[in-house]
Length: 475
Image 1: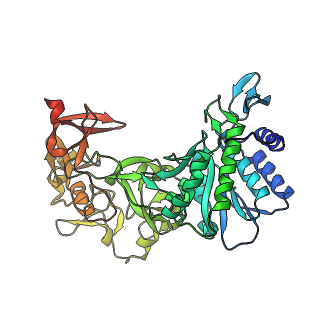
Image 2: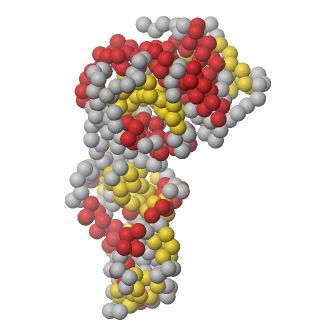
């Protein structure tokens, strides 16, 4: 049964809510938190991105609770907090309601409460969560090696227990089993949620069970945002009960699987990949698989790679790499990656652009003719230079290639490169392939043998896809 938040803690919550913060200016919240930590007689550390890290007590393993310091709301004048008799808090600016910032001031309040009342705990106040989980992306993973699990209170409502992402459990079976009785007692239910700091860490392979819990705020990311103090207090007690009940051990998360989440896999030439950065399905040829971090091979689409200032193209092999791995190479007069610089120094001249290139990165045509990657079309086999004049756009990768380097599938032209990529991907482990498609009339998943492609295309987002109609709708 839910209980009312004690006046002492309610007053502290109202004081916290008066602190304004956004992703571009967390200074006031940072100063407030560091002062509160020092009042508890604790020390803290910060990293280059601005995260605040606190460790209380000495132990072999620690429970870890996190929150983020920024909100989506801009600074306003005459910012005032109002409370009602039915346990609600909301904010106004010049008599107009504005967002109170419960996302994630409620999580910050929970962390401060647990820091004060528990003898052993680790707490992280992340920076810039609302601008892409920047704090979680840049924190050192070694900090979590002795953490039992990760808990974040950064969910609206009063009963959500987020332990599912991409149809996969973010916690171990043992963690889920031991928390089950506590969830039932407090009225929480497992569900799938959106991206947040703990989910970002789980996607990056932190290796321990990660959950996100409702924190009692409502209408997030809007001017009508408000907090129910009774629901927040209930969530805090639920979190404390988990920490006090679970064993003093590390609950490793289940191994994250690679899943193709879309049913749009057309005929035999297209395969979709999940981009964790923009959280959308992308055609395999529109991104790159690489060991971006923690020696785990993951997929990133080219759109996200271009937006991220940490990556850039090697102008020799035309692969996306970390900027720190690039330097100017006088031999070929280009910015090249470390792998290209390690290669042999045999150089040649591109017959199209007349720029110097490494021979091992060039394509030989008609014997001695060399073409560099930037002039070469889609990495497919070209028999002679005259073929370059007769081009067609590949439906899969949207690149112009020679007509002799692909084939037509109905009205659609598919280059050999995209076809070969699919054949190669079929041997990779951990990828789920579907022999189904979604009917564009009844929207039901249907076996390809029980429908047909009409030859027309429909627009999905910024892409155009072949129209598939099941036999029932055709009749």
